[in-house]
Every structure is written in C-alpha cells, then in structure tokens.
Length: 113
Image (cartoon, rainbow, N blue to C red; front, side):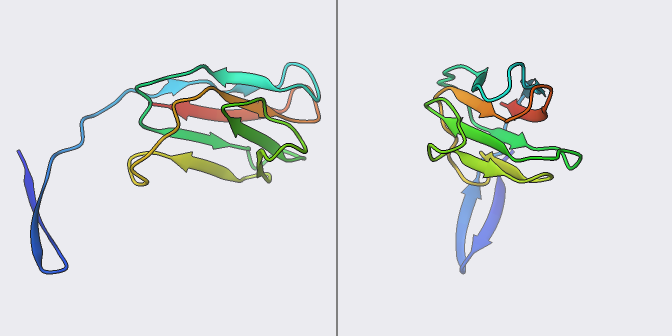
C-alpha cells in the first residue's frame, strides 16, 4: 500500500520501505595499529552504521574503499560516536569497510543491510 504525503503543498506518493535484515560485523580489533576489514564489497548495501562504544578509551577509525588508519583521511569516531549512511541519506557506499584502533581488543559495532 502506498502512502500519500504532502510535501511543500505537493502531493507525493511514497512507496513503502521493504524490511531488511542487518548483517552484523561487530567485533574486536585483532591486531593493534592494523586495519581490519569488517565488510567486503556489497553492491546491494542500502544501510551502513559503525559505532565506537561509549566504554572505549580511544578513537575508532572507519574507512570505506581503502584501509582505515590514523592519518589517512579515515572517519574518526570518538568513544560513543557513530557514523551511518542509508535510507534517510538515500545513499550507502558499496565498497569494502574497514576499522582501525591503536589497541588490540578494542570493541566496535558495525552493521549493514
């Protein structure tokens, strides 16, 4: 069933969003100071979220398309910080996703759909 929405006085038909299952790539950093791939290339990815848990004591670096690192333009997530792309942004990257932290055992949360 389509829903009728009014946007700036214009009638727009919005198709319902299909439910998706999220793949969980969450884990811990295996080797300190070395990028770790979380997800490979995914041409059907529509949603991506990565979070550095609030209990973390250091930043988590996230990168798409190349290895994450401390000084290469990766996205830096402070403890408790998150980064997401997907349905509300109308775009999600399809390239591989990697994370990096200075300490082995650093926990991270990453999910895609």
